[in-house]
Image 1 (cartoon, rainbow, N blue to C red):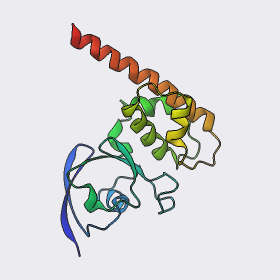
Image 2: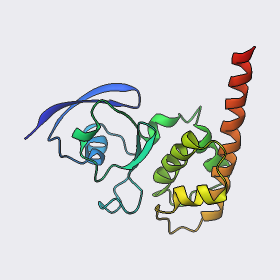
Image 3: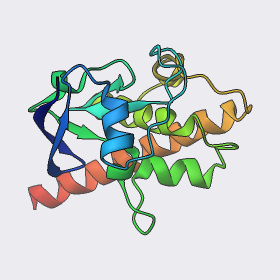
Image 4: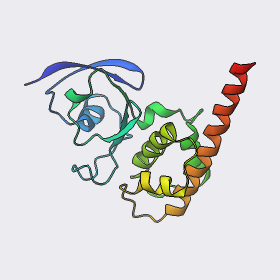
Length: 167
């Protein structure tokens, strides 16, 4: 049975009338018109549907929308804009880390979640964060380079903010 569910998506308060058990991915795509998260497998195995709920990357194809009320949801569209991309998005572009682009949503979301919890990840941490994201295009080295570059960029921004706050 449908219910009116209040969400905060990409910083905006929205309401949708859906069954609380509806997968978050379907609400994002069908009701809110957000196409960054992709339908890949429907089993939470490929990572194409990843979004941030709080600071955690989740597979939105298996998360009931009712389980996300009161928690901020961020999709690829909410990370940055074409004019001002998020550092991870900018690094993926600079490193040509996408070919077909289908999996890149999940890779970027996973990288953002990683950098929010670990601002200086080593190679093992990066590979661990991305290990469950399926990509068949073969840009794996470029993806790893992009995450390393984004880590450097975000740590420089964080350092500058700390220095600015101290002065």
